[in-house]
Structures are given as structure tokens and as C-alpha cells.
Length: 294
Image (cartoon, rainbow, N blue to C red; front, side, top):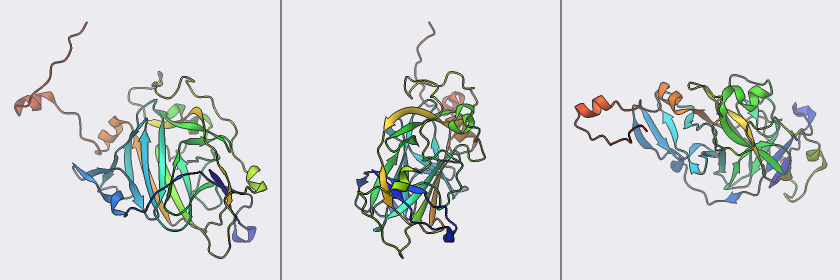
């Protein structure tokens, strides 16, 4: 993995010493942007697919060990939706669809996933870097250059943002903003690490997970009608190292993924309401036997 340090100057209005992270990601051949738009109809103006995309980015989400469907609603063309499963870890995969390096800031619940601070998706924040046609998986909050705390769906009141007194209007939002590289300066070999990267404000510790047993068990105290947030899950190895990257001042693209529990997606009209057995009977549809109560 690589950590890219940004060649920035105060004259450009950018804080010096900020840095960018890049992992040893899987290089993939370019696939047409149509892949991101290839969707299957769900009804009522909602379609579903695997990737959310806006050139030069494609984004997908894995919940637990499974690729999660992303839902797109015609009346909300600026975002995609994904179903959160309480107590389950998740990962965000980001793909560079171009033949040039890009960097991206990833914000979860309004916080930068690298330093855990409130994000404005700006060019002076810590960010990850991708080589041409490369993809990487962001697995959690970055604790250090070697470890992360896994993203975990949990009750909003127990989320990392809430527990660090940083709850904000972006709870339930995953934002990935892409930055192109300035072409007026060169860049350092990716194997080298700049000293200023080691002085970056990477959070070394954080709130303890509610359960050290992993991320597959639900949070027992969650209310039935609660809303999800992203918790501070178990620690995993995830190494990065420093490279130089001089981002343009403004992001060139942003991909937004909204997550809610199934009940929330039903309330928003993204998913259909559970079927009514009486309606099924009236249509002559089969039901299935359920086990009797003990």
C-alpha cells in the first residue's frame, strides 16, 4: 500500500503536511463506464446494479462477505442506496477507470475515513491514491499506517461519529470525491516515504468496539426502529506507505452512497413493502408452511 504525500503550498491555500494514502491494490483492465450503469429493473422507478459510477470513479460495497446490490432511484439521481445490516462489517471498493493517477477522499458519516475528522471533501484532507485502472478496498477507519478499525453497521447512537461527539447531517452517507493530479509538477517514486507523512494526523486509537467478538453479532441495545451509523469495529492489518500527489484544488467527481436498514429503504420507497399474505391469497398464490410454535 502507498501513502501519497501532497506537494502543496500555503500560497495555494492548502495546508502543508497533509498526506494521501494508497494501498497495493488490484490492477484491473478498464471496463466501460456502462458497467456501472448496467442495472436491473426493480419497479417504481428504482433499478439495481453492482457499481455506482461517475467518471473517473466506480464504487461498490461489500456487506459481510457478499457484494451488496446498489439501488438507484430516478427521483434521487445524485446518489445510490445500499441496505445496512446491523452488526455486520462492510467495505467500500473504489476503482479508477482512467489511464492517469487519481486520488480520492472518502467520507463516512461526514468524517474522513483516514483521520476521523469532519470532512469537507477538500483537497487539503488525507486521501487515498490509485494508479491507472487500479482498484482498492477501503475496509475501515485508519488507525495507523498499518491497521484499520473495520467499518461496521451499528445503531446511529453508537456510531463512531456519535461517540466522538461529531454526529452531523451526513449520518448514513458514504461520499467518495475524486481529485486529478496537477500536471505542473512531477511525483516521487511510489516506494519512497516522505518524512512529513509520518507526522500526519492519523488517529492511532479510537473508541473500543461494543463487542470484541467480531462484527457479525447485532448490537443488543439497538431500538427496533433505529437508524444505522458506522461503528468502530475490530482491528485489521492494512498497510499503507507514502507517495507524493499534488491534487487539483477542486474535486472532479463525487459518488454518493446512502445506507439505511431495510425498513428505512422501504420508507423511502427504494424497496417495496413486504408482501401481504391476504393479497397473495386473493391472487391465488402459494404460501409455504411455517414451523409451529414450540
